Length: 575
Image (cartoon, rainbow, N blue to C red; front, side):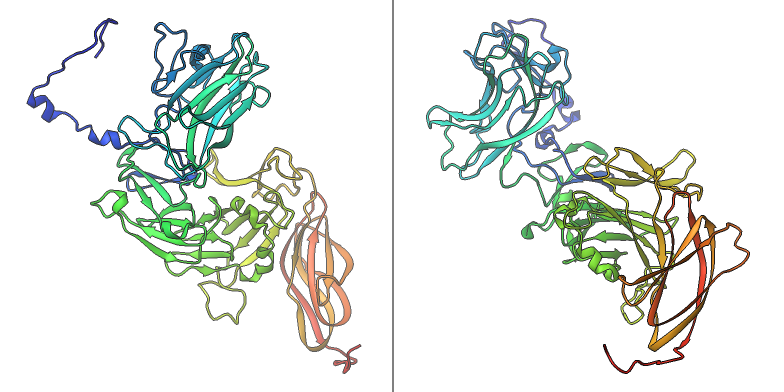
């Protein structure tokens, strides 16, 4: 309905009963809220489920400036709806769109200087109570504020302020202050600051104020968007999972559209996924499951604990296989198919313990079910600043424990781990136009060897270099040993490839090694490669490898002949 004049002050609207009964009950619309920025999302039962939402106070009005602006009427400014322009210092405020510039999202508020006034564009709204009389800020709770701020190219001086003020209580907080030098030209940067310390009294005249001072130059503008006020000690809704309406991905009910997953222990929900009509929630050190009961809204669904120990610190810490998952947690990697989670990383526990767990939120798990490999990017080492290794698990022979003395095995012959020296901030299996999935790595700027490139893992067997550099690839056997000393004789191996295959012998530990004359490789592989060792020792391991760009090898099998030592099978004394 449109009223085409500026003089009408009241109107009577009348509907008959038939029209009212056929209308839509709008009560539920007043329970909807704006979804905050989240860590992740999944789809289940015709709904979207979001977790890791950034917390914010919901009953302020138009903090994001997307709710519209008043038209100038006797006052030289556009005022965001829900706000009041200051009579003395309110000039210079208007919507970002009116300047012909882009807000961060939807619409934004701009403050433009005139080169004369010290304070420009001041707007306020109550921080005490909303229109229903409900408290906005509570006593004895500290609050902070976040906002996205930019500037235009003309602005060279001035400071933007977002703070709390009360004349009656003498409250005038520092709040958020952004100088023209800190703001980027037409690029929004988020700033966060303490807004109000915990106070015992919230006076009725408490307001939030937004303005610029420092006499901004004529035509110089601050651009402000996405103001959010939140409790300082709870910036994230750690246990809350938001659920949309059925077939309504943009509607979120603040009363019934959520699940609160085990809020008592304080662990954050890091991942959520769906398997066999069950909705799983992976927290930092625990695992839960829920299911649509077909009757109630999500806040009434039952949530059951699956494990009190298995979880992940990363939003990318769960890899998805064929009706099973790998969960990368503090204690190790766990295989989960709906039963009891089984650990599959015990044999690399010292390596896993070397992860820099202060950056555990960066761990990334991806599973290639075609090649039967799991890739786990981790920040390895105390000095790691980003993911610098990919721990690769080959489960071609199953997930069985390679230690035959372990009586708790899941099906399979044995799993095999390999640490790849691949530094990547991100990785993913990407569906290509030919229908194949290929593994790609993102080399980020936070890495020592950063290139800013995206790399593809070549699976064709035609590229044998790492962006032109050599790949130091090798395979090492276990240690051949007996109760006494052994004489190791001929080594016979079926190995093919290109370039030189390096042969290294290791005795007893990784520190002792002997380099043998290398083998010149051929791709034909019609005959075995041979070398005579003639070495006496208690134990011996073999390493085959290449480390030149373009060189590669494929080991089909190896046999090492050994017999009891001809002389002094037992030394009989320690030196």
